[in-house]
Length: 213
Image (tube, rainbow, N blue to C red; front, side):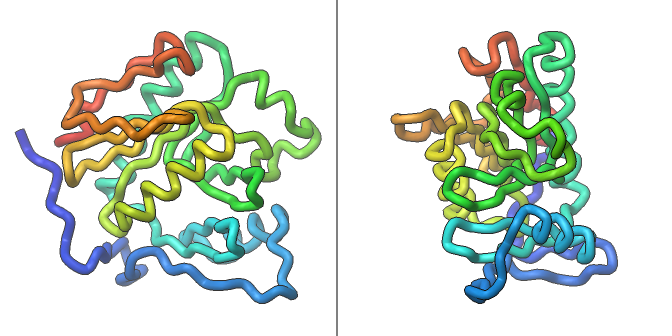
């Protein structure tokens, strides 16, 4: 079996013609700039393929485009969640380009997420192309070569504090998964074959066999 590549020193990733970007950059915003949903969406449109997130401390996080390995792993997870959701008809699936505005004012883009129809319907139906205003119940983050693991853990804790009920932090470089739940310490699984949606996404089983390759 081919193993996932080791994380390079320096945590940089060359993607196409976009060069090398250090681990995600965090820029403090001036008080005069209001990072509205519309402004963040326009910022992303004008600066494709760069990706942007916003922390609760008004820091703009600039992320590089995904490399082929990260994109492949994310697609594997997203496919399993989407197929389960299509069969269950219980909610909606969000991909890596979907921005979510959280109660703490931050804006994050999960690698994959699932939101129940109940939470989906709480949003303004006339603003389907705006940022999601409800926190997904299931959030999946996959560690990429440019990520700092501690930052990813903090990000997952933020998801849970803002309303997520189940979080998977998948690290293909360490062959491990951290499972996050409200009011509990993260549970670590070493190279599991699959993950369960538990009582949050009943019947969901996601295979990780191809993630570890």
